[in-house]
Image 1 (cartoon, rainbow, N blue to C red):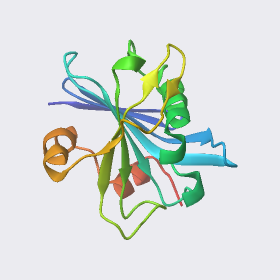
Image 2: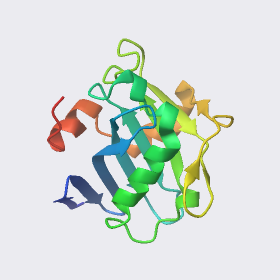
Image 3: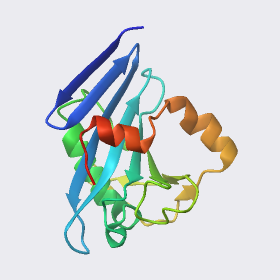
Image 4: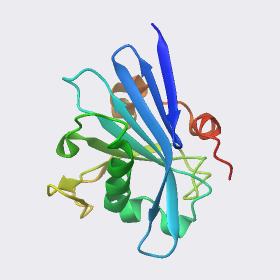
Length: 164
């Protein structure tokens, strides 16, 4: 299979066969202060499989500006970034995942975790009341996240020329 890599304005687009991954260091205005940031990756497979977005908390983002406390705004910001890179993407059909681990500002000594975030989309913006969010167990991570073949966070940040 041939891999196609395109980098435009800090957004990396990888395509291998029918799988496309769009990644960037996402920056958005957090309601608790200054600009927050995370590693954001959208994985699109065949049209029959829902797209998945993984937002990874990174060490260069202050812990008090964490992604979990402002996930809906981060999702809105990411959809604005990928709108020009990806064709028809139904915002209501995206599966959202928060990713934490040794690369994070939040609990950098803790284990790698993946939490499915239950965002509602009202036609213009995402909303999150935290009621449907759930930590994925080891079996779900193996079955749902590992097949996405996400590059480890440090390597992905290096490829995006992110320092910090």
